[in-house]
Image (tube, rainbow, N blue to C red; front, side, top):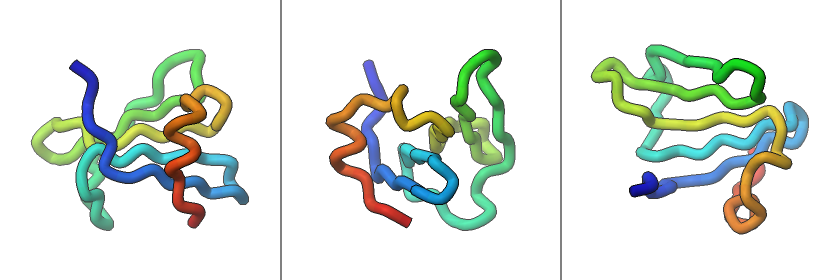
Length: 72
């Protein structure tokens, strides 16, 4: 079962794509875990729930998700 994507944002200046799995508010990320040998970082809240996925390489994100991205 794959998680539902709440929002997709793209920061052109940073070249970063962020997949929000829930409403991500300021300071809600309490732990970020980089995945070794990738450009992926997993963000968790205080409960240990995965709330977001960041990629510094937009090419690893499926095109259909990038088409939904809101630029920030």
